[in-house]
Length: 167
Image (cartoon, rainbow, N blue to C red; front, side):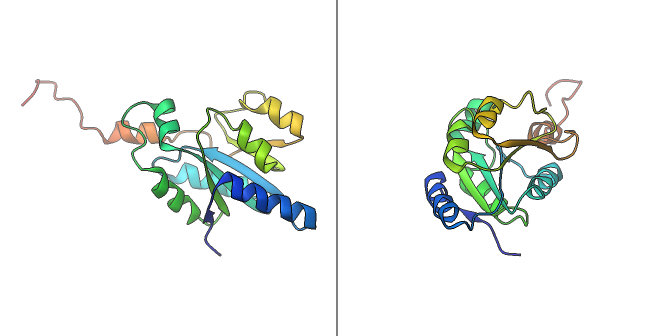
């Protein structure tokens, strides 16, 4: 299987517009997230997302966006490295950054057939559901029940407090 490509939303939107005009664009699926520390839950989510179409685009939060969502000290892994790791996963065809607080701009630019979210959402709680409905984009909830997260992994990696106080 070939490796995915890291690109920009604008370049990919132009490519998709050309393919739509030529009738050669398959069913595009859009997934998104921070993907700070990759774990098996991410891979399972992306594999199921990919099963909904012919091409999987993963929109990844920029470093500034992750900090805004998760706080100082995040992301642990910079965008360029997160994007490269994701592009190397078998389900992923394209990786694009996004800096906005939601996916509306990305959805309007790429016009995917399917917008996927993890199991911590329902079709009614997806923040961009109104935009998806307006544009005729199907919402698919994918992946395992959310029992894994980067936040939990980071918390588990911290040393346990010493009940007797500092050394």
